Image (cartoon, rainbow, N blue to C red; front, side):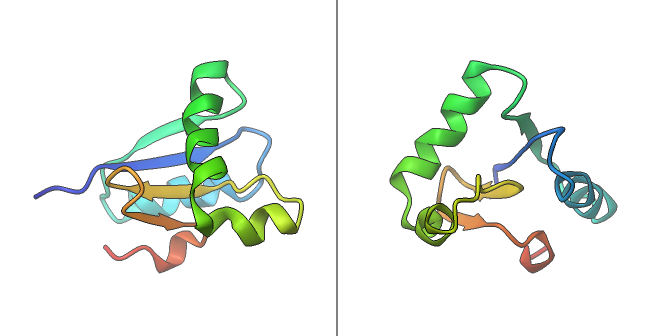
Length: 86
């Protein structure tokens, strides 16, 4: 089964462009959602941020949490794109 991958990011995030390049360079098919482009993208991101324990440390540090790779609707959530298993 093919993994469904969403990369949440923002045009204001300096780490998001390298995350996109990493996935593209490894021929990973993904949906990129810029959380700063509209309320729908932001709401999709907040669904994970508000409900997944993977975000607890991020929130405690006062960070937004992008770039963020979500695999299969939350089955796996990664903030370090270099740890994504190709």
